[in-house]
Length: 279
Image (cartoon, rainbow, N blue to C red):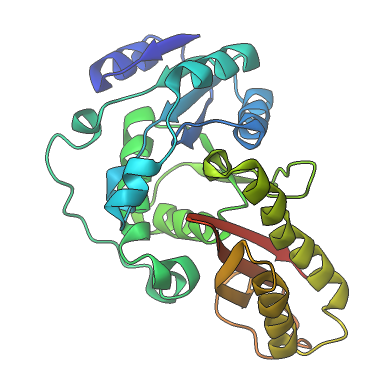
């Protein structure tokens, strides 16, 4: 496994690869866990060359304290990636990715006005800035993203379409801890007691899937909110039941579309997201 930290070294390495080899990219912000490694393993299965980027992207944080608090552990990340068999790790400094401020503004229409987009203004513009830059630098054939970031996945697919980029976006299933809690780098910020109680979020989502045929969409969302908020460690920021493709709220459980329940909740000071297909 090779580690590069500059754009020049990255491109020099990629240019020297034999022709005809497909390249898989797994973009990450580090603090890697089994969820990330599942993306890496899928990429390794499908591509002879796999690049993993580790970059905590400042333009997608609307809260400077959240950026400061975001967990970072490059040494541990590199060990995990070495064991997984990754070809190349790109771990640049901010100046490498943004030698000048990125002033591009993306328009994702209704995809970005709900859920994460509504509660984290500018977040998806920052995501699109960094992912489009990584695609331009690495020129991957395939890029791998986890379905935990359900809305982000829709935004990235839309960006690829808008920019006409020749990259296949590969969605990968949510990986969960034994308790059911969706794996996230932010879980590292939870105390042992918070982590235990955070599992109520996924428990509620699994139960909501069972109840989806018995309650109206509005009743189900309210039941989920009440169930999660009952736990003294948790506070719901939003619960939305949305159409899988448009991300717009679903009003009737009998609508013939794939419905996804999406949750953002705080466990102490740590913000967690999760989602579940209901049908």
